[in-house]
Length: 290
Figure 1 (spheres, one colour):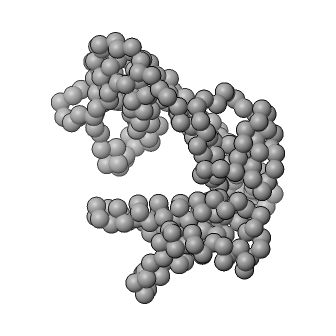
Figure 2 (cartoon, helix red, strand yellow):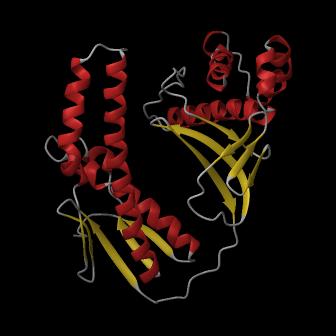
Figure 3 (cartoon, helix red, strand yellow):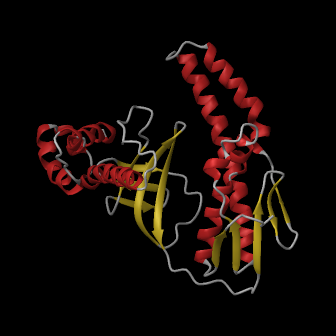
């Protein structure tokens, strides 16, 4: 139902293309009580969840205009099909975590597997569906104490043969997870292409293919988290190359191995871990850094 709400919100925002009229986030937010009167089914959904749908669309338009201003490929916000909308959010209230149960407003108690202890104050709760699994994602506000200073400084050269080469000579291996998963992905791609689209067996093959890609993504993220944790713990200043990955992936033979290395994930994970520890990550011109 959140996905179905997104479509009329996008239609009203699109009026600026034809009439020069734009209905912004707060205008759509005020119309939600009227919508509930016309469509009683929306009374079954907590009000802030519906408001967050309009907020998501507002963020999409902000990004659209930012790209237009930067003279990039704009990409107008698109309508969301059944296979493109996979989450809804309680932005402030309407949820409570009680032991092994998560209480959601207008839904009830849902039994969960809490894989780690929640720290700090929970600010938002997002319910997300991924590959027929459901996840509750909490964003929490915590007080972070700076880690003890090590006095170490390091430069990192990103690569394909080795994921990262440090200026002190340390090497971080590139496990090439795509090479390990390629056979399984190719197999399920072939099975999927041979089955009738929309059939039960086609959906089964599609789920297996999605599972193979999910495993590949989890392995990449796990490796990036482990390397970034080592760097953030050992050094106070970490310098990465400021690579133009968007242009580099246009290479005919190296593109898939560049994507498989997940350099951007490593930089992003190291940056936020270093900030939490009171340390610094910078990106420098890659010219003559190898």
